Image (cartoon, rainbow, N blue to C red; front, side):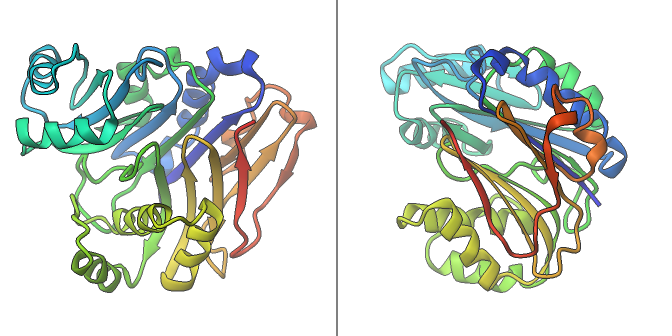
Length: 299
């Protein structure tokens, strides 16, 4: 079943409240996905410091401070880390993709679950509300956040299988539903040199979108191309450092509702996740149409 929530803040005065608002939204959808959860936060000064790139890892096998020391030695810079077990966040004044390559040499068994200049990705197994509070999401700040509560259908209940999937710089994708033909598309991407970290069908969608973004498509075009190739029932919320986008399958089988005000845009699987947002009573509230790609750009 799964639950999706996302919040894109237009009013900078709301940035300090991002994590608290996102936690409240996530809490309302725990029953849609009680087995694991994850979230991506854009712009938090602790989780993704403005003077550094951030890489999010799963199952690093070392304390964050030790891993940061090894990364710093490898890159010749001062690095820092935060333990949010099973996630580790690492920061360094370096290009994010250079950091990713270095970490794959240092801890080849760890999984890279996010990287970029602005995004921090955190995942775990367990009750979504409990995870959010344990990781400190209510205190997070920033301009945009995406979260997901998972009910596993296509792969095992693991932190690696939870959403969001963040496979390109400052990109993430969350998904309610299932893709029917993901294995054939995965084989095509594998032949093109794409490497996968899980058996999750959502990762195939995320890597398809990331590949087209790398090739020059904007987010709207990448999602239209996904709609042409992928079969199944799905609602997707996709974000990067500039944009926030929603798309549904041609039948619009999976629920979604959007609310928009001059101060923010929010999306959730059910309205109850939006009901606590400031000013929601005066929001424009609507259900996204089948196959239409909705994109909001950062102002």
